[in-house]
Length: 267
Image (cartoon, rainbow, N blue to C red; front, side, top):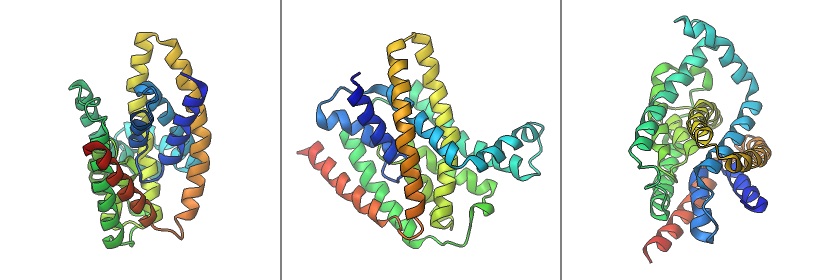
């Protein structure tokens, strides 16, 4: 794949992964609307892995805390902050891993990669995000995260398997409905993305190794590097802007994009 194409895909992924506008949807739209070659799922997951490294670096203290609690959690104890956070993230990830594997085994993942699906998901879940942001409370912080809330947000994350729904968008929506403030909702959504992306990356990584596609692996590494740099910059900017800007600008963008995509799909 040409270097410019890899760079373009990586920048789109890096900029949109942590905004509630669906990075997967934008990656699907790139070939659908420009006529470029579809980058395929290997590159899709590679750029997700690049953004994964960025979010792990940005939230390195939370990541270190969760990792420190894994041994204690494996012994069946979640009585310290690290083990508790690791357990919450594991519980929040379980639904999307189970359902995602079922979707892949059924061959439905490719069927969902269409402009029509992305358009409807972008529009519907953008409006739902606005509703949650306007009506949800802000009395809870990330320190109030409980196992029931982790499971509920994990079920919301399953919706992100629909291209255009946005992993960040649906988990933030769920968190806002539960009463978490905007910054804390975004923080929990970012932390939840880490094990989810790890799981999807491991699954496709196993397929790449099995097929011994060295060209795809090389392109994936290049794309992951570009995505890491773009994502780190975008994440830093977004978390700063979130202090004074709500989710309305993203919702307006999603509505405009969704309407435009449906017009393209049905014209």
